[in-house]
Length: 480
Image (cartoon, rainbow, N blue to C red; front, side):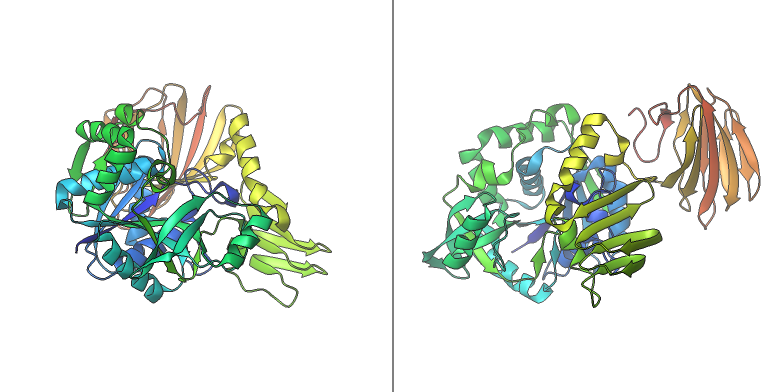
């Protein structure tokens, strides 16, 4: 039976701020071993038997970043395809879109394995065994969830109540889904033995999931069909991508797959599994990936400690020091700094909410921002000026563009730059520079085989990133 893993990569991971942000979200955070969660998920999916293609559903702004991460992963070769959302519309929309898209390619008998991009699974053989059990049940027309054997009375997860009186080969019928409980209720679930953590992973055939959408959430599947009629597919040697139409996608109900379908369907079963699963849902969960010292401290980066116990510190850019403090979370990034008590790790999301309400960019971007062509880092800014470090990948180029309100001075630090400045074409090398007046059409390209690094000095009345008109762009952003 053909199996297509579908990786859903849409969550921000607000509890992991200030490292996780909208443009550099939880799946892209490097773990202590150097890999990030989306690379691990892609590798895990490609490692399953008979998997030839992995489909990723993500925001179109994260497409090139995701593609770069896959190319750097340790995965076995397998085809990549993408569904690119203009904005998030929750998991029911993502699953319905994937199902209809795959139906048009492989038919109704193909099976879908839904995976979250930001979960960690340490036991690959146990995971592969659970998937085989799920495939057997999915072939019988069932919707399969993966229930994680609970290790503690966790209040941060939803639960699945399984019916032990209705066993199936490799699984059990699901009685109900339960929201995140309080501590007393979570303890009773743990003691009962028939409750499992809801992992958010699923397996079903294309035909079954479409039938169940039509029965229980027709408004979702019908609106997604309309979206697909208005959307376009592009193919290259590296991947196939489906770019969803923004106007029609806005009409799709914003609802989770649990609410839309799983809690309503009578065909839901669970495969209990112990696979070393974690959703890395807070800084306390992230800290568990780092070994503790003799005082229970866990450090990433250069940290000095005196009479301090049970702390987690991530400070990769500068020296951090602790004196006489216990049970703290300390996370330092170039433009934001977090200090929280471990007991309040879940409440970091409230800071992110405040940042959104205040219109503060610290919930959106890091000081270094990733683009399809490379990165830029804001070094300093003030009234009427901004300085950036720009890094362009070999063979990459920025769009042909123009600014109304700012001029730019470019200085090459290393590498070679090909520059269009109105009707002139320049080739600049190290220590050479050029000036781009406001209103000039211009483009920057790296024609070399090594990284191009430049310093850009902007000056003008308005220096916002939205002061840009794109005329041509190899990454499809012209006119946006």
